Image 1 (cartoon, one colour):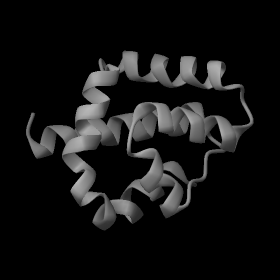
Image 2: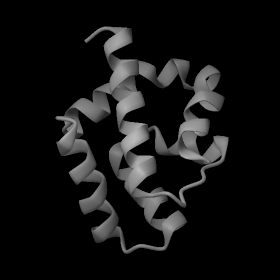
Image 3: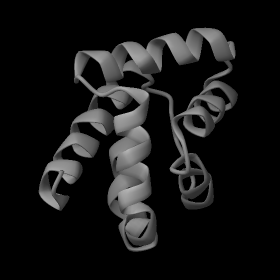
Length: 98
């Protein structure tokens, strides 16, 4: 999967998550931590929204499924962009905040 395709999928995912979790507002440090794995992301969203982790996981996975992204693909995205996350924080953060 090339860089453009990964970026496209991440953009789709972040937009869809924003629609489902409208009150989600992440700091750069929180986003950096969340980008380490889908489980970390679910935990952070649960904490930020006050939803139970199981409900949050279900909603996040429904969004991922609608975009044909499974956990392994999400982990692959995160691994491939891990080194570039620092320079992309503002772009990604803006997709999650109003």
